[in-house]
Length: 351
Ligand code: C2E
Image: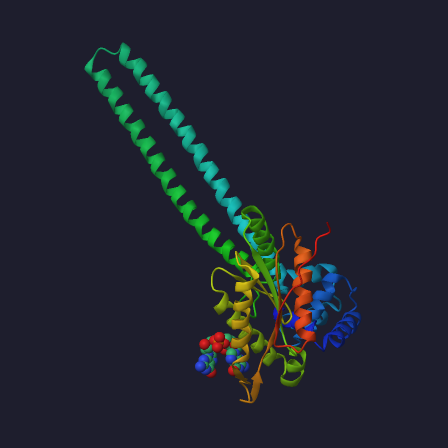
């Protein structure tokens, strides 16, 4: 749902949708706060969905929606908030586990102390005991103290083992949540946030090692026209198709992300512009080589093409400057006929 809203508010119907959102908020009597806008945007976009149904239920039952209702709706239905709720839940479980482990350790500490006192007492008694019966009693009390200490240790081990398992499960869940937060749900590529982080890392690595690094920006040609002609669902399939070619050609060493809308970004760590130009040509040709079909009607959609621009990072160049050069190269490809890949101009440094 989130991705489709994301596409809708950047598509041809965006302003109509935004106006309907304002109208619906006004008629529900809620303030147009950023939170309410997001809630109503999702509800208006999917009028049969669970969020819209819940809003209607609250309006029918209470006649109005309070700010508390809005908070509750956001926490329950907005994907971003669901994510932070999962993080909060994981944090609470971790807190519980850590405090229970701390309790067990404190208890083990106390029982080790008591055992130590018993041993010290025993050694004192031994030095004064002459008769066999006294020694027998002493050994019996030492045996019982040792058994108690062993039982405590076994309890501690068992508790630590189950905490370790719980923490491993938690870590897996958190990894999953983190992965989701960094992934574009429609195409399964990295999202913009993951791209920003990866680009900063790749530049830092290039600075540290003196190795080359190249950035490419790609854009699907005439995507809006495509969406208007065949509908958003088919548009989504086109995005998935382009993404599948990108991730296949990029493999493990390069980084492909959905930059936003119909735009994609690729990072080529350790690769200079010559190699990148060849790789981008492979991508461009492969994308254009296939004639797609509309699944619902089997209509021939023809071939999809992309335009691209790439820039090899110059020493000390800022991320912004690098992005600007790649973007300018992309727009040169668009202006000069599309279905083209262009290299960025080299920035001339002031002497
Ligand atoms: P998807 O529909 O989830 O398909 C995933 C993969 O399953 C495809 O990867 C392809 O390897 C295989 N597959 C699915 N349907 C067919 C089919 O009818 N014939 C054949 N030979 N293989 C099929 P691929 O090709 O990399 O495509 C990735 C995504 O791109 C697809 O995900 C779909 O969303 C989109 N796509 C690709 N080609 C078309 C097309 O001709 N029409 C539409 N509407 N979407 C397409």
